[in-house]
Each structure stands twice: as structure tokens, then as C-alpha cells.
Figure 1 (cartoon, rainbow, N blue to C red):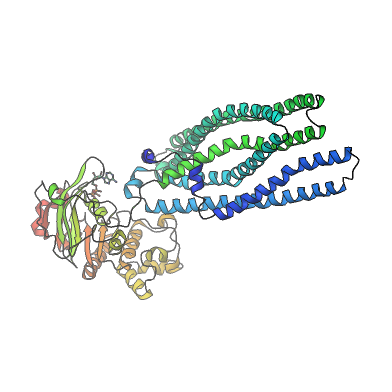
Figure 2 (figure 1 turned 180 degrees about the vertical axis):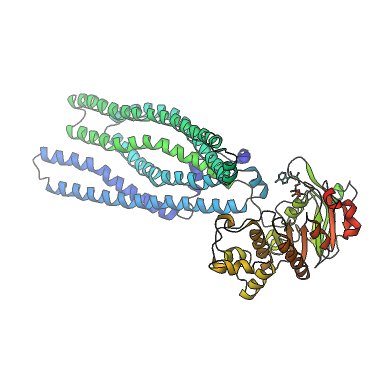
Length: 585
Ligand SMILES: Nc1ncnc2c1ncn2[C@@H]1O[C@H](COP(=O)(O)OP(=O)(O)OP(=O)(O)O)[C@@H](O)[C@H]1O
């Protein structure tokens, strides 16, 4: 991701920060695990006492009952704490997923331009699932095993510091080998997850344009490109597996080595009278008791690295810049940018919608170079101009998807950026984009998207105004008929009219329509022209128009060229400035 430089490398502390909210439960579960381990660690001591009692000819029944009770208690406490720790792990992932979903819905528009949606989705689904698996099993096991190992090692040192020191030397030697391979495992796992994100992004690209792929007979080419991503995932995972394979022999070495060393050194100490047989048996039981959790710790380490790699990718999403619903006060003064002549005089304090000396760039190239014009209240203004002139960009600024580098947008003298929050401003605006997407759901869901509480008579009125009445009558369940993925069961013109109705239903103060006639036939185009005049009585209407019929029916036409307003006024005043295809008409 571009913004990775700003992202700190995640550690277990990052993970720990996400346990906020369930820490009390977590602490209680850890105390249960601790108590369970304590009971486990007491068992070799009881065995030692039992051997001593049996050797001395005393009764061992009481000790055997105690052993059974301690065993049962340990099992119950471990089961309970494992469940609770597991639950806390699920809670962490749930919080992370919620945060990611909120984040993805609120990212700055420019971030969506830079990132691939498939990858963002993969981070929210695949990476959180990987982290969930690691948290639910491996982290829980790591915590429980660590407690057992620390306690067991303590008991070993208490029983016989020399033997314990020997065991530790073997274990630390194997641990050093492990530390070397763990770094590599994390690197490869992260690369594999990156490749999984790319695969998701590539799939999203191909499937969302599947008709284009088919008609261009590009299946084999796309299949080869997708295979490259799967090969990448395979390659990185195999490298990680190769490194992980080193882990098992290291564990074997630690466990077998410790046992052999303890037996050899222990027998020598028993022979020299420095150690009792019972103590050696207890010590061997500790080595045996610790072998499984110690091996578990080594085994878990690669999985934990994979979990951290997933958390890293999650954190990168959480660190992306989001849109803040605050007033902007950091804008540069307009005057210092006013180097170009303003094509149309505009009075900032004037009523209606005023765009004053707007400057904007997406990347390096300046797209708007000081555009100014005024849209009187309850009027119908058409914006015309050649392709790439910056018409849709003006709508993007009006929707506050981007902030202008300089200049201002005011409504009745109030600045869109400094005197409205984004939410307030957008509640006053309706926007129908060139390709306004419909969403999976019913026709009603789509129509009432901006106004879920719209009253039924107003809904029917809008359906009629948008020329959708015949469609609603024809559909088997009327307004409650599903429209398919992206509205695929409706024609292009129907989708466009639904998008217009959706915007109208919310009764916006300003309605922005980007090329509303592009999919309409002559009959619907005429109906829309009448509707536009009706709408302009209720709200301020701004339409990006390519068709001469729309341009001619507007109260005012603003002609944009090269990011500047080159003419504004009635059709007769501006006709000479229209692009060639209109001028010829
Ligand atoms: N998200 C973006 N990132 C970078 N450049 C962009 C982006 N969107 C648009 N542009 C560029 O900005 C310029 C103006 O685009 P815009 O869509 O505003 O033009 P337009 O006048 O609406 O054109 P058309 O009539 O063809 O829709 C174009 O050159 C376009 O390539």
C-alpha cells in the first residue's frame, strides 16, 4: 500500500491494544489457566510424595485420591480458561472486522482511486479469518503453554538447579535456531497474503467485466494472469513451509536431548547420593510434562508470525486516511491563486449556488483552473463542454468527494467546506452520476435508498415523474421486485430513471444530474425534459448535458473548456462556445 510508510510495524502490543473491552474476562481466564497449570505442576510433587510414602511403607490411598482430584481440577480449569480465551480472541477479531468495515465505508475518495477493491475486501475477509484462527487456537495455546512452561521450569530449578540448568541450555540452543527461521516465516507469510489480495483484486477486475472478457475471447489470457497470482501464493507458502519444517527437528532435539541429558546426569547424581530416586522421577515427570507445551510453543511460533503478518495488512487498512465530518479551516486563501482571469464574474455573497475560482488537481495536472459561475435558486443550469473539460470533476467537488485546492463553493453565502460539515452538506445534495449503480435488492430498496421513510404517495409521484410507472406495472411484484446484481434485470434506460427517481425522492435542495439522457430513448428524453422543468421549480438543478435538447431547455448554460468557464448565459449567448458537435446542430 502507498501509505505503508506511515504504518508502524505491528507487534504483540498492537494485538494487546485490541483486547481493550474484554480485558477483565481475559484476566479471569488467565487466572483460571494459571490455577490449572498450578494443579498440573503439583502432580509430580504428589507422585514424589507417593513414592516416598510407598518406599517407607506408609498408606498411599489419601495421596492417590488427592492426585485424582488435582487431575480433575486441572482438566476443568483448563477447559474453562481455553474457552474463555478463545471467546476473547473471537471478540478481538469481531472488533477488528467492525473497525475495518467502518473504515472501508469512510475512506477518502482519493484512497479508493489508488487501491484495488478486491485487495481491500481480501484484507477484511481472508486476513481477519487467518488472524481469527491464529487467535482462537494458537495464541490461546501459546498463553496456556507459556504459563505451564514458566511454572514447570521454576519447579525444575527448585528441585535440582544443576539438572534444570542443563535442560535450559539444550532448550535455549534450539530456541536460537528457531528465532532465525521465524523472521523468514513471517516475511513469506506476509508475501503470500499480499498475493492472495492481488488474486482477489484480479478476480474482481475480471468478473466485474466478464462480458468484455468473453466477447474479446480473453479467457485464456486472463486465466494465465490469474494463474500467476496463484503461483505466487504457492511459491511463498512453500518457502514458508520449508522454513516451518526446520521447526519440528528443533523441537525433537530439545525434547529428546533434554530427556537423555536428564537421565544420564540424574542417574550420576543419584549414584553419588546428591539426589533421591523420587526427586529424579519427579524431575523426569516435569521434563515429560513440559515436553508437550514446550513443543507446542515452538510449533505455534510460525503460526503466530502468520497472524502478525495478517494483522500488519489489517493495520495498513486501519491507517488509511478517512473522510472526517469536520469543518475545514486549513484552506489556502483564494486570492493568492487568482492568477487567471475569471471567466464569469461571481459575487461570493450572492444567493443560490456560487462556485468561485475553483482550482483542483487529482494528481500532477491541474484539472480546474479557476472555474467560477453562479446557479440561481430554483433554476435549471446546464453544464456543457468537451470531454475531459472537468464537468464531472465539478460535481465531485460539489459532492465534497474531494476538496478544492483553492476557491470556494457557497450556498446562499454559506461556504460548503467551512460552514457545513460533510454530512450536513450532502443532506442538501442529490447526485445522479453517469453510471449510477443500482444495488442488489428490490426496486423499492433502490428508490428509497436516500429516503427510507419516504411516504407512499410521494414515492408514487416520483415514480411517475421519472417515467417508471409502466415498468412498475409490468414487474411481477411491482416495487417489491428484485432488480438483480447491479440492477442487471433492468435496461440501461430503466436503471438511469431509477437513479433519477432515487435522487428526487429525497427532495434535495440541489440536484446534480450527470448526463441523464445518455441511455434514454426520444420519448423518455422528452418526458425527462418536462420532469427537469418541474424539478427546477422545487430545487436548484444542475445538469451535465451532452445533448442539444437538454442544453436548449436550460435557463442558463455554462460552457467549460480546459478547466475554465469560457461562456455562461442563455443558449443564444453561448452557442458559439459550444463544442463542435452542438454548434453544428
Ligand atoms: N479520479 C481521477 N484521477 C485522476 N484523474 C482523473 C480522475 N477523474 C478524472 N480525471 C481526469 O480529469 C479530467 C477531467 O475529467 P472529468 O471527468 O471531470 O471530465 P468531463 O468534462 O466530465 O468529461 P466527460 O464529458 O468525458 O465525462 C480528465 O482528463 C480525466 O482524465
